[in-house]
Length: 349
Ligand SMILES: [Zn+2]
Image (cartoon, rainbow, N blue to C red; front, side):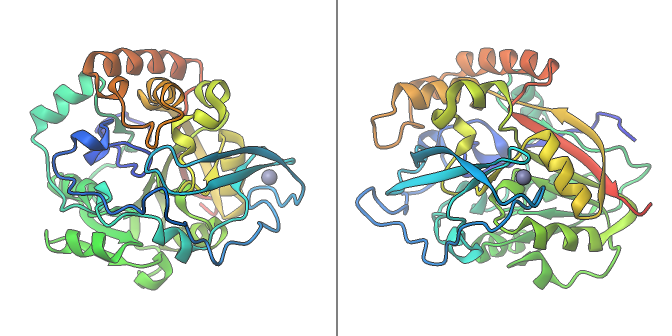
């Protein structure tokens, strides 16, 4: 295992990565219609939020305040608090929103809810080498098999893997996004994974790319992922790294903090612990950062007093994004990048 090709576009969402994972501010995304996000004056309702009783990674119940800040990306009203586990350093929202509450925070025109589109290979290649689009690591498989993308949005990544010969399935909390993907011929089950009803040991490859940090109940979801993964299959998880250089430097202005939709912020060590606790064995930890952590965070800091600091000239500049991505890749080399990718397998094999 471990060959680095092929790579696929990132598809993290709320945090400002654009369609297909491109680091693109929403103002320039041509497929995004008029926003329906509640204005700053509207109250954000988290009716069923509860303080986390114990850390899902290490079981520790003591924690310290981390940062309290507002939504810099979409301008949702209010401020949101985070705590840091005293045992393992996991950062989490306090109180922790329920699955139902988090679902209400996504706008109807959220980028990954748009109809999926398979970009031409040449376009992906150019964007990748200009540092404008990240490609996530895909473990080597002897031949295409059956895969699940958990938190797939409308399924743009699934279209690419289907094009490579894979039998593809998606699971997506948003009914609208799942429906958009189904209209493109994809099998995307809406709602929580458990409700999808996949058989035991069904998938060769399960991918959670920038979706685990959005999930408020990982101790419910990861065992279900384990159940549907074949013995010897591969689990890919891509998440921000709260122990990375840019997170440490920028603090509350770190681009990937992305409150209130990022329920958890992991580090390599505590995510490995969480995987062990839920029946997985970590095979590899990689770093794959882009311009979000440095240039995006600088953008937030410079416009910190405006309604939506994420909309700014820095992140719209192609040369600056290319340069910032190159700098982030150097930081990745010393394993301090702020986006990490973990490959794991079932611990029982
Ligand atoms: Zn902990």
